[in-house]
Each structure stands twice: as C-alpha cells, then as structure tokens.
Length: 473
Ligand code: BYC
Ligand code: FE
Ligand code: FE
Image 1: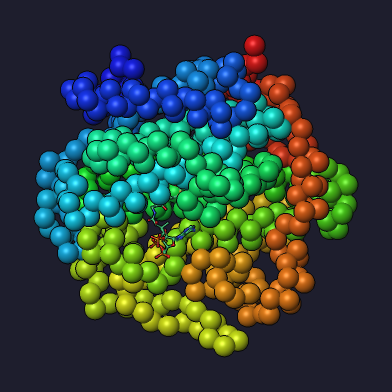
Image 2 (image 1 turned 30 degrees about the vertical axis):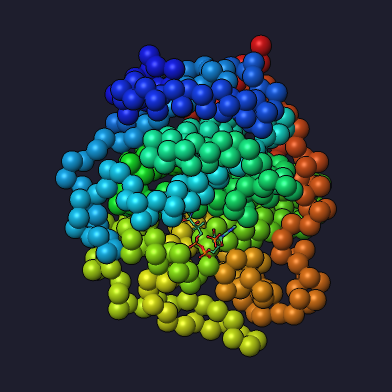
C-alpha cells in the first residue's frame, strides 16, 4: 500500500531512510517550481477530475477526484519485489536480479535512467500551451492527466537516481529540471523531445506515436537485471496505457468527424473539407508521416554497440524478453536490417546482438500498424475511399542507417534537391500547421466539442460526456 501520510507518497518505506527522504524533500520544491514554470500554463487554480495512484494492485489502483494540479500527490510507486526474480537474458542470465547497482555498470545504467527521465518533463514542456485551445473539457482533462503522470514518471527516475547513485545521481536529478524542450542552450537529450507540439492534432499524434516509444522502452527496461528499475517501469506501464488511449482515440475522433462530413456533403476535395472547418485526411496523413519518422529516431541506430552492451550486461532486454523462446543470449543469431546501397535500399543480416534497437523498433512498428488499421475502419465504415499508410522506415530520418539519405515515403532513394522539392507533399508545411492552428479555439462548455473532432464514445470513469471534467473557479 502507498503511504499518503508522507510529504512524498511512496511504497518504498522512504521514512526508513532519513537521508534519502531529506534529499528528495529538497528536490520536491524544485520540482514544483519547474511545474509552475514549465508545466501547463496558467492552470494552478483549475480543479481537474484526475486519477491518482492509491495502490499498485492491478485492480483498483486509482482514485478519481477533483485536484488542483500543483496539489497533485506525485509519489514513488514500485510494484512489489519478487524475492526469487532472476535475470532472464544476457551474460548474467539465471543469476538473482540485482538489488544494488553493480560498480562496473554504474555509469551506463545512470545514463539510461537519465535518458528515460529526461523525456518525461520534456513532454510536459512541449504540451505547455495546449490547455489554452482545448477542444472540450473532456480533452482538457485528458491532457492534464497525461501531464501529471509524466511528472510522476520523472519522480520514478529521480527516486532511482537519489537512492542508488549518490551525489552524481542528485546532480543528474537537478539537471533534469534544468534542461528545456526546444531550448537552444540546454535542450532535452533526445531529438523528438525538442520538437514543437503546436496544436491538438500534433498532441494526439505524439501520444499515439511517441508515448508508444515510451511503452516499448519501458517494457524493455522492465526486463532489466537491476530490479528497482524493472519494478518502477512495470508500474509506469500501467499508467502509460491511458496515454496511448488518449492519442489513438483523439486521432480516431478527428478522422470520424472528417469522414462524416465527407459522406454527408459528398466531398472528396481537401479544400472543401477545410472550408467546413475540419481537417482533411491528406493533412492527417502528413502528420502520420512526420510523427512516425521522428519517433523512429528514438530507437537509436539500427546497428548499435551500445544496445549490444545493454543487452549482454542485462541492463535492458527486448520487448517481452521473458516470453521469448530462444537462448536469451543471441550469441550466434542474426537479424535483418535495411540500409542504403548506392541508389537502392537493401536488407542485410547482421549479428542479432547489435540489432537490438532495430528489433525493438520493428516490434513497435507492428503495434503502430495495428493502430492505423483501426483508424482505417472509420473511412471504411463511412464509405470514404481514403486509407492511412505508414511511410518507409527510411523516410525523413536523422538517426541511424538512413540519416544521411533522402528517402521517399515509398522507399525510393532520392537526391536532396528532389526530396526537398516534394517534402511538403509528405510532411506538414507551415501553411498546414497554420491552418490547423486556425481551427484551435477553447471549448469549455461541458458536453460541447470543437467542430473538427467528434465526441468520444463514453466519458471518464463512468461519468457522462457532459460532466464538468475541469472546473474554472
Ligand atoms: N536523439 O547506439 P545509438 C518516453 C545518441 S520515450 C538524440 O544509436 P543507443 C516518453 C545515443 O544516446 C522513451 N541522441 O543508440 C514518451 C548515443 O549517444 P552517446 C524514452 C540520440 O544508445 C512520450 C549515440 O546517439 N526512453 O518515455 O543504443 C512522453 C549513439 O547511440 C538519439 C528511452 O529512450 C536520438 N533520437 O539507443 C513522455 C530509454 N538516438 O552515448 C515520455 C533509455 C541515439 O554516444 N534510452 N542517440 O553520447 C536508451 O535506451 C537509449 O539511449 C536510446 C538510444 C534507445 C534512446
Ligand atoms: Fe512517461
Ligand atoms: Fe506517457
């Protein structure tokens, strides 16, 4: 059970370690300063119908009530320790999981935890202004739910840094509050977390594509030999499911609105869709292309000695490692990876150990494709001919085998000039973004929705759709 009588709610017996408790209680006001400075703008007084974790049981772990966000009970929640857990992959397979950090792996592990931790506040910063233009109270509440939970994910990593990495850990925890998404001088670590999230279409796409990278990275860290990391990631994954739902259903509702207008008014020309104040499917496809390619970069290089090291040393496994049916060491195995050879893309077999990043990315792509298939049921059911597709994995990449190349969505190798001449057929142009921004206005009457998005099928936690999910006092 979680101890809520403490300044920092937790289920790790923080009160039993005074030094650690004091250090985290010093970090807590710094976190709140960060939230006020870089979190959702101008929201301190709003009462938001939020869920808060009250236990780590699979059933009944969340409590729903009105909360002012600065008073949200951010805390430290790990799933319970399994006394007999052993390491399931790599050189240490079969040994007991580690309860402390092995000296040899200290800096590598710290780097992984910092990189994971850095993405959480970054996403909150990227979404800072979206509350100003929410399409409904329901959506506004979902945005804030995601934001407070990303804040809690930061806490999850900061706990590990403070508890297991001493002074360097405390310094890293401070640095996590100092970097800013998109800043020139002190940006966030990974590329996608310095992009802008300018409007709600970008937000829903981000939650669908980029939060799902979160799911896959957390899932592979949930396999870690370092047991406290595995246990904290397992609980984070429980929260993550909602973020993915927000993204997928948000895009689906936009597509639904557009397809219904196209059916009812017999439209096929994107300009006519726009004239009715909805987002044409061609523009939505450009956002698919953009967010997909930017998120693929988060898997790092397809062939990576870092990833091989993480795996052999037991720090980071594959997706659902424990369920896979092989030797979990991969010494002699190979894995197919694509790369550019002259003017074509070829597939090459490489040692599986070096292709851990490519493999995780491929697992991710399968889930993304399934989500697109679900989106495509909407035009199918409304009799609209359009279908969403994923661009080639080499399209618009900045990291890995395709970084120096110019690949079309269909997978053709192009010259830079030819690619640039066509890029706004494929990714959102400044005009596309300006058009979407022109649709954004604030809708805060309970039960009302902006004209470019359909209402959801149901409300939150059994509440009606016109429930007052956010109170402006
Ligand atoms: N941007 O061997 P390489 C989430 C660096 S999302 C900038 O290619 P590696 C969330 C790399 O760091 C999940 N730099 O890749 C979602 C390395 O630098 P050093 C976040 C990049 O190391 C939504 C160099 O390039 N969690 O939770 O195997 C909302 C060569 O590296 C990038 C994690 O990522 C990039 N895109 O893998 C809220 C898990 N890609 O060491 C939250 C922890 C690579 O040479 N991180 N580099 O200086 C990792 O496991 C790994 O760091 C990566 C990269 C998978 C990201
Ligand atoms: Fe997160
Ligand atoms: Fe998330």
